[in-house]
Image (cartoon, rainbow, N blue to C red; front, side, top):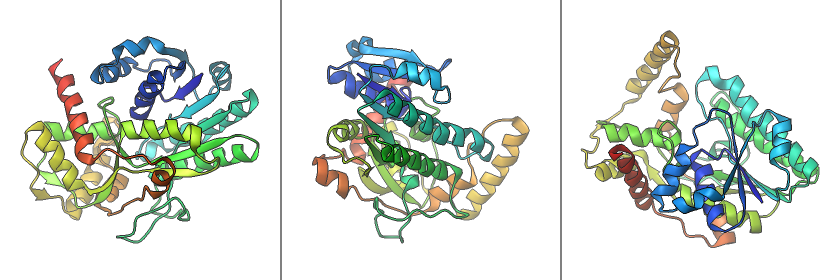
Amino acid sequence: MDLITGATGIVGTHLLLERARSGGPVRALFRRGSDRSIVQQVFDHYDASELVPRIEWVEGDLLDVSSLTDAIQGVAHVYHTAALVSFDPRMAKAMYAANVQGTANLVNVALECGVKRLCHVSSTAAIGRATVGVDRTEDLPWIDDKNTSDYARSKYMAELEVQRGILEGLDAVMVNPCVIIGPGAGTRSSMALVDRVQRGTRFFTTGSNAFVDARDVAKCMSLLMERGISGERYLLVGENADYRRLFDLLCDGFGSPRPTREAKSWMLGLAWRLEAVRSRLMGRSPLVTRATVESSMNRRGYSNAKVTALLGHHFISLEGSVANVVSFAKRRVSR
């Protein structure tokens, strides 16, 4: 039996599909009130709706140890994808609770219940820094300074909880995916960017990042559950690219004009400050923050050499990932 936490997220839904296709039993942890309809939508997109009944849904919460204990009974492998992603300073406390304490609770329950192996989803945010033009690797030392976001810090601290569990006898591997491109809920992660571009945009940012297809993340996690070295972490990277190239590909897919105006640093600085005021007055989460602005301007790349050498996996191109997510977005709108 596999257990997947965060089963309604982009990684979680694709892992459900990957594991359901393997033919074995799969259990999905969900929180009360969460919308599970996205799983049906993603399975429909991949013409795999007949696999949905294979999923055993179990209600629980990472901060409720008793519910975790119930969910993990009879489970051999745990895929821990659940996390709170936010760059809103007001969400920092909740994020540390979910990402750090939640991971600690899962590690403890896995140890107590004799889980054979855990695969933990971290992030490139927990990877050390390198100079511009040098791809970052798993071995770079962690740097915590004024430029470190609460999200990055929470993911690094979650990794420490997994390492602590390994010292106590847990068999576990970690993956550090970059920006994940794939079908999912419209308000989450990269799908929010996809929806924004679909509505139209005239501006592009000058930064760069690494991108990976959600299908690749799910496939690599399944393979690493079998072949990954305990205690090691693996960067999951499909391609390093400029944000402008991503915007251009998305616009081409939607048949809309490509962005032609560069978003200057002063524009973005003004934008996040105005958004901070608006969000406080409206009592809503900001659409743009200082951290997201800085990320959009930074230029960085990551290496997938380690995981490629181990698995021999060939990653889907950025063009392929964008075509897939555009197809999903168009289908969702036409409903």
